[in-house]
Image (cartoon, rainbow, N blue to C red; front, side, top):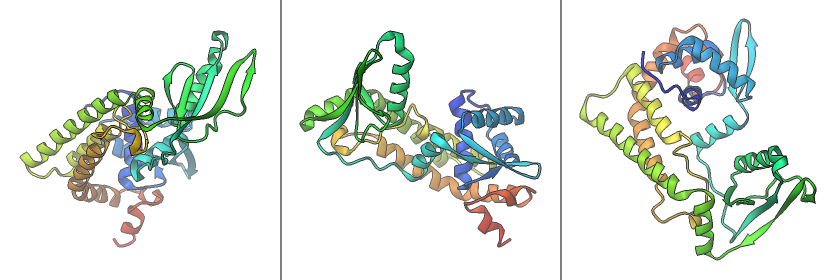
Length: 284
């Protein structure tokens, strides 16, 4: 069995990868367990992970007889949709949407909830007490200025150079660029490995595709969806995506053959919804 990273992000990524490689909307539990085993996760680990993701509302489940059929949901579905289909950034209007806040320490929980909601909405923080984003701050229900603290929303117009400097600080762009360069180097090494030997086949090809997806898709390497006007001229995100697409192109034929062979003998494959398997199975 292949060794795996034991981080929650890695194991959740394997679930998302299984949906992605099948291009499926719904996958039965036994097939998730089977594919995850090939990626190096034991059956108890996978079942515990699925139960945890249900509690966190990253998954939804319905029962078909004694079999659970799962769908991605909530913020996790949004994330994997962005990774699968791309994430077009909002247009740059010349101004940031801003949220200015001053919440006392005794209400730290309120402040942390505000910051978490802002992060989910794609806002960055150039300095404490100031959040900036490219869309309306829907997470702010109404401005307040009372004993519970101050929260105000508005617009901040900046010249292009000042906007780029503020974006670099708010979204830690230099550190993200360094991570993206490391991701590109890791993908280049993976592709060099393809060129140095025979074409990967079967389970090895599936594991390599998962490794490539985790390199490019990990939050450590993820890039904010910012318009090009706010990014450095040599922003490396596209390079990472190009290398990932190259790896996927090389691995898709052997991975497809391998998964088709596994699904063709599975009693649960008929419960897969969406993706390439239902039409493929109808022509067997």
